[in-house]
Image (cartoon, rainbow, N blue to C red; front, side, top):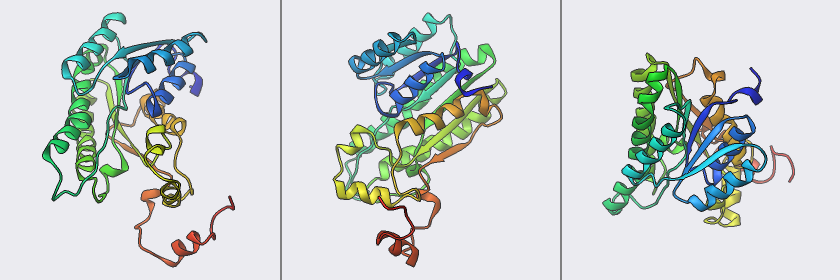
Length: 273
């Protein structure tokens, strides 16, 4: 199977498909011949992306879906199933979000919002597609976790906890649905150069993020899309319940302040910029 043929004539739903990693997935899926449904709370942006890709011969449909609104999310997925005769080959969940605050002080409303935005919305989307996947005897789901789900981050506890819960949910679903031919895996991105991220950090902070990875740079959305689509595709046919870390090596060290780390901050052990 060649990479360009992985999704030919497949039906794929991408939540959060308007921009960032979601849009990168939509673009690659369209290039590989999938019938893509981009669900997003920003239907104008998703619609513009669909129009651009369809002008080149793709099959992309944009649907409004606020993942915080259970009824709207279920209705959007029901619309997909209605338009495809009940078929969905892959669900790729990208939509989510974060917030910060010390655990001892954070407003529980923020905690509840991140739970709903990340974990509960993932559960709802999975519930909405699983009956169709069971009926067809196959399917793949990729959930959006994070390296923050496998490590702790000061001031990010609500986000970390929600992402850790997604990892556990992914493993449970993999076992519950494996007998129906449904695979469920999680992607764990590190820092990605999305417009949203770059708009919220300074140049100095960006350099700190770059320096935190073994590759001396943060990731790009198309790179993460490649990892996500591998998990969603039949190339990963014997992979389920897995968590694929794509973080440029950020979590491959203990973060102890060794001599090597200080030398690299001084310009050693890296290619000159």
